[in-house]
Length: 212
Image (cartoon, rainbow, N blue to C red; front, side, top):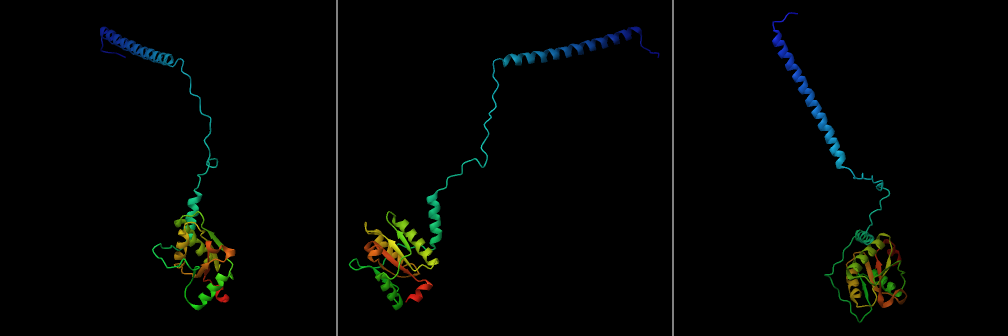
């Protein structure tokens, strides 16, 4: 193949190519040297450093974790409040003479006759509520729950133990009892059921009509 380039031009072109190749090789060698030096610098910088040991303690599974402790007192309080279905008011007060034994009924003849028998001990309380150690608020909640439970289960007679103490519950409980719609009557308990420290309550359940 013929060319119009002179020998001098060809030599100059080849010289340029050779210089370009030499420059490329020099640049590659320089890059390799820089990489080798960087690796050497890194190795020198981590001399004496100990590797971190992997933590081999396995986390607890969902079944192994301890369950959250439940507040039993709060749960019991919620259960009683839900079962009460009735809330007493402290704003209502009736007059019960301290000089006479406690006795109250709704006013009709059958209720009067049943309450008289209640005072004589003809009815045996199937539920008893001991209010010793309770605050007034707690006693009120417990009483509402007891009466509601007894009425749902057709239990005609329950006993409320208020004790002697300061007389706060002894005065408050009768005022609560007359507010409950299913109470027929109540009286101071006979000696075998607590005497002056307790109250017997009669509830108007279907069975009671057969005992008049």
